[in-house]
Each structure stands twice: as C-alpha cells, then as structure tokens.
Image (cartoon, rainbow, N blue to C red; front, side, top):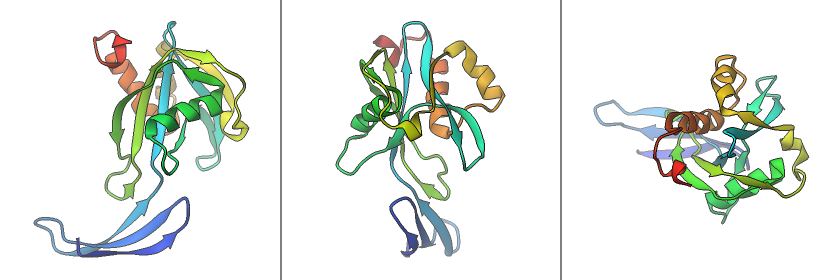
Length: 179
C-alpha cells in the first residue's frame, strides 16, 4: 500500500481512497469503507430454540428476524458487547457466551469486523431497555430456521453466519455443544 486518504468520516462510517499495488497487479486507487466493529449473539435454549427479534429495517424497507447485536464500544471487549446487547435488546441474560468466529462481511471493500458468539441458556432479567432495537422478541425453533432463510426473512450477515454455525454443528461434539 502506498497511502490512504479520508474522503468522508463520521462516527458511523469512514470512506477512504487507498493507493494500492497488490502482488502481480498494477498500482491503482481503491475505495474502502470502514464501519464499526460489531458483536452478534445467538442464544439457544434447552428446547432447541433461538432468541430472535422481528424488526423493521428502513434500509431494505422490510421486516425480518435478527439476532441481538451491536457496536463494540471503545474499551469494551467484544464478549462484553455481546452480553450487553442481548440484555438491552431482549431482556434475557445469557448463562454463558462463547466466541465462535470473527469475519468480514464484504472483505473486498468494507472493513467491519463481525464477532459471532453463541450462548446456551438465558435467564429473563427484565424488559428490553433499548426499545428502538428490540422489536418483537421470540424464541424461534431451530427447525424453522431453514424455512425463514429460504423465504429471505433473516436479516443481516451476522444473523446468517451465527445460525448457519449452529445448524452445522448441531448434534456434533464441538466446543459450543459441550456446554
């Protein structure tokens, strides 16, 4: 990389122009979007249900199911964010929380690390405190997830990655299933 410059920057999004020369490719300018670092959590109960929220998202202009999650605050560990967001958005406190993967949702143009967590079991500790984020909260059977996915009712890559991880490891002896 030969350099970068900011084209736009605020607390939510930064747009940069990078001067790059990848191996075997001629030098060129490339736009890069930097978004926040986020944590998303799938909480599964003993009845094979996952804690989800039915919400309206104005960017795609539609309702859909999402897992709780949000921005990792400065100085906050992603695990703390994951726990805090579940409580704020649902009123449930996970009994345990485990990191399963970190990924970038659009690796070619967007820098936005997504931390995915899975929790097994939760206790109701109150009502959601972040009412704008909460929407309708429901324990959704894992058996319903493939149908929701097929109908396009699952919103956000973090929701999809977490649920696909759970479905792929269900019934297998893994770190997440050991709890």
